[in-house]
View 1 (cartoon, rainbow, N blue to C red):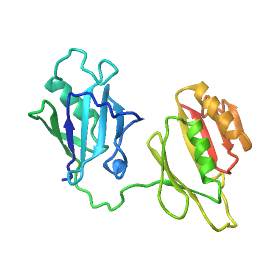
View 2 (view 1 turned 60 degrees about the vertical axis):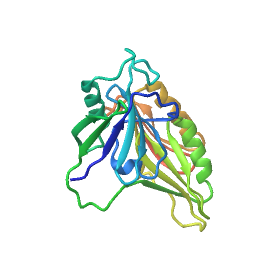
View 3 (view 1 turned 90 degrees about the vertical axis):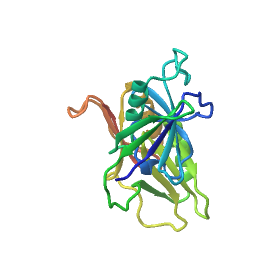
View 4 (view 1 turned 120 degrees about the vertical axis):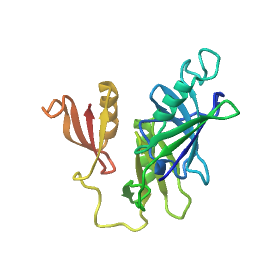
Length: 236
């Protein structure tokens, strides 16, 4: 049985500056800096905890500023709900215990697994334009996160809505390049945001399917950006 530890506290966490949304898995946090996770009406501060899976500090999000609106400590029910909302994908809460500092520890049961895979990422290989592409993608999607790896070859990690993409510059020039048969498919909840992304990504590129109602989607567009990367944008 795999277990992860959730350390909860009612203290405000001023260091939380960036955010990501949606579910997460244990492998998602390997090697990442502390950041926010939003979900289930709660806001969490998450960071890898060496030797014990993962440690998360959280407060019940009631006043928009990591504060408890009532001014008191969260109830057992609130801690239990927060622990449930913070559970890694595929894990369930085994127990929640209060700690002397006023926080709590949640023990997760993540089942038995012999899998040796920690993460799967989309790999985009450029020839000298990876940095320029990353600049465009972070401009189009300001909520995304990126970091550079050290090494003789330019390599960056980019995350959008929980999906990991690697951007790499290949020193040799190859006979192959990107193909529309492989795309980044992005679902939007907001039509205006989708239209803005479509406009920016298509500049200098190619529109294969303009934004329209195609029956299978009320609003959909397919483009190839100026670097050759294919994008399918869909209004969910």
